[in-house]
Image (cartoon, rainbow, N blue to C red):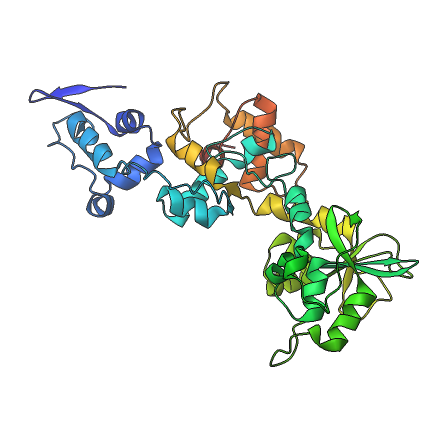
Length: 375
């Protein structure tokens, strides 16, 4: 970095200011323009001496950097009894940053996540193979969706289906596990469990409903979220659209939009089943869930707390390894054979090529340099 001494003050030019502040020359040019000085508070240049470039005092550059440095992040509060998952908006709120800022954190993390390690942000907990993978989430919520097993002896149903048929809350049905809390007309659960769930004889529950155990509710009965096993004419387990929404905790209107647009590889419904449908093969639902999770990262609150309070360095800068060049970018684009690549895809390919993390910000700078290169 070149420096000059002007009236006892150490100063540097625009290229030196970029190096001193760790910013690109293009960014410094924007900040140092008259409009940039007014908008961003960038220091005015020193009186220009004959034969010297435009110069900026280093102490004024340091003061500018200090004024723009973000305030320390507040420590997120963790309720140890409720280590629930939070999405991007929840993460941003917990660490006290704006959504646009958090989006940049995400952009600079995708490439590292694709290589199965942390980026600027920790790897999402809901990704396959992670502590709260979407498959584990679905499994944990099975008991919340009314489920019917069709057997040779008749229908067997879980507690959520009992609640649906009797018009009662699921929490109330849970209390019926104790015989003293169970109304006389409600049957006892069967001795066996299916898929780890307490189950009832469906016909016995229907008789109880007809004999007065059903609670009448005003208005139209809501459409049910359902899972069916052993349904005649269908191979494997089936989930209807509302059941899919409940298992993934996605709003039903959003699921309907995904189904209409085929978003995230939304599964094709099975043929021949109309009532309470459309219906989908359970295996296809899990595949969709994994694809959905890859675009909707979520973290446990404890992961957010550990990230926000840990002592490891978290910067958006270059990781150890060779710095990518315009030549590397050109090679990646040539290998694509004319296919349009997103910035994130280019970052991932450069990361693989150089065996280091390349951020989207670096890719954007390389693309600018490539566009400005002669020929």
